[in-house]
Length: 628
Image (cartoon, rainbow, N blue to C red; front, side, top):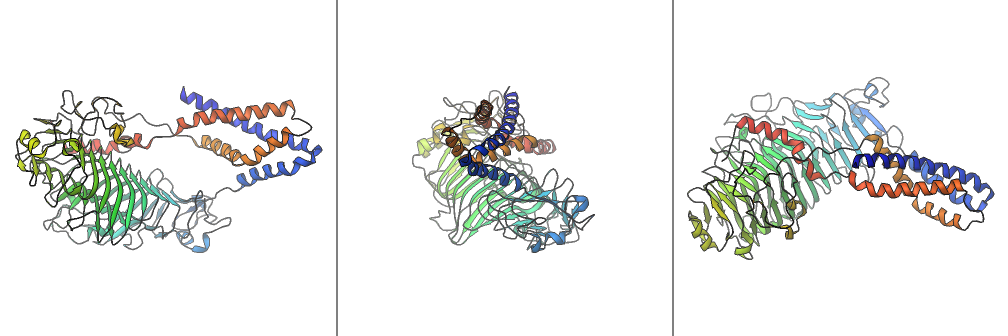
């Protein structure tokens, strides 16, 4: 019914819009006898004409010029050389200007360098046509195969299957070199989406290959503010998505699938710089083992955040991510937030880690599957962490004002390890470290330096730490391979209701299934019996978006329109019945549009498993892991 309502409102809005134009024409004719209104109507008409006439251009580019070389299609494409020439960018027809779309066609073997910035409301888009790819033996380590060249307001859209790739860089390939697929440093107000970035460095299971520095082998290297990187597939890189931050803010990294890389997502700063408002969510990072070496040259992390020499990070949200596959022999943590070496480390402030699933196989040793260090106001809620008998599930040091609640931890030698490298403090141990569910513990399940070193007895742990009063110790969590609770699982109803914490995304589980507003929550990342992904979201058609644009154009002339209404009211000759009819239809349609429009807006959290669930399923089948 909702879709039917939207369709009807669309038709009504379109008819009313056409009627509105008819009304303009009729009234302009009438205004010949009413000289005072002519100037005002011309203003309205000019506004509409100018708004509709400033159309963005679509220009097509390939490796070499083709056909008419006028850029009107892939058959008549401009060349990569044309794209890389600054004189072909800027204001004017036939140039790449703010608001334009540059379509990339076929296989391009030249490095592509953006020559100008877009602007607010007029983004420059680089769109990969179907089958388009940027392909080189080794993309440059200074420019990448695609370089945004410190330009801003740029969108890079991989379309259906756009690819950036190396073809000959890796352990057993022709080259062993540093390389970047896409370089977007200094790219504020930029978006990178729908790309596949592959084979930047194909490191095989040759334990002797330490030919490259893995931080110099990146699929995407970026910096700046107001950046989103989403819905990309990345494989075979050292540090896949790397942010060497300066004074940057408002970064969103979500819905990416990353595998066969030593680091999935890295955020690192040097010197007196501050990064703030980073959201990393709904990503799937897995399979690191191909980067193992005998020399332990490459430690593995799903998310690695670090700061040195007074670098600071604030307001960090890491949630709804899935980490699994083969962790390799040299993993530090699926989530590793690294502080500075000094004891009074405050590298990270206001960090929230919740609704993540982090799993490592039973044969791997991991220092902290989730390892958080160095800072104040850490909140760790509703994570599912499953490891091996030689691993640490949750590791923390040098934290102040921490909160650890509603987590489900299983199968690690140390379910908890606190204080190894510095003190961990809570404002109130009893309330801020509680409602966790433990299962299948190792010999030293709870290890808090000084407080309760290598405790194996749960009652002793509770007494010594003054914490976990409502937590439980169980033989098993009874969850499946994904960490989803099964019937009879001790996580069911074992958590505190954290609605009052005020984190909107925490009020639903990893699959966007709402948690109750009142009453107990389940611990871990998933609700019981509500762990299936959401139904697919319907997207708005291109035709529908034209209607949206048209209504927005009319709204843009609102001041002139309202001025016209006031003037008409005081005219000696009132509007005709026909004019009044169209005015009524127009206003009614706009009001209905305003009521219906919110129903069209997609919820980003709802697309998590739809985007990368297939990767998760394939990975589980390959590794055949089960947890009881």
